[in-house]
Length: 228
Image (cartoon, rainbow, N blue to C red; front, top):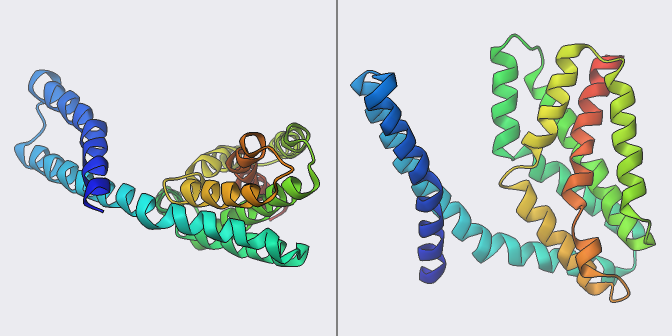
């Protein structure tokens, strides 16, 4: 565990420190922001390093192994209904707890949007349904390229009829939903799922889950804008 914490701390520092250096250079050359704001930034950067360190260590120690075990267990029951229900619940829960979705919801409300909670639910439901479709696709061996073309084609068609503000929100919601919590969980579950299906290619079927699932929030928000 200590080794994982050390690795995570090094990665967090090397990721955030360049940003801090750039901001400090701008502060003393161009910005000249108030000292209080600069100190708050430095404190926030230090807190971010600690948070990212703990998050990365937690993902490697607990989240990834558990996700792989859950994914490996589902196909062994040979129940398509169990896989569908589990995938929908799993996709919904991890998306609702995704920090990026929460931040997007808060900004949506601050900018005058109505229904921040509804937006989170729409995003989570869309993510859950498309994540379930991604797992079912692995079972039947349907080529992912055709499924990607279909779902993103639907998104483009809906974008032609949705209000402009919902089009922008929809595509941002897709990227926000693919955040630091949902991506490790979905990839770990998918790789564990594929590892049991020996007839499949782990490399080709283990990836693409997130790209397909991210179309769910986009389509969900666009449908919200078009029909509601």
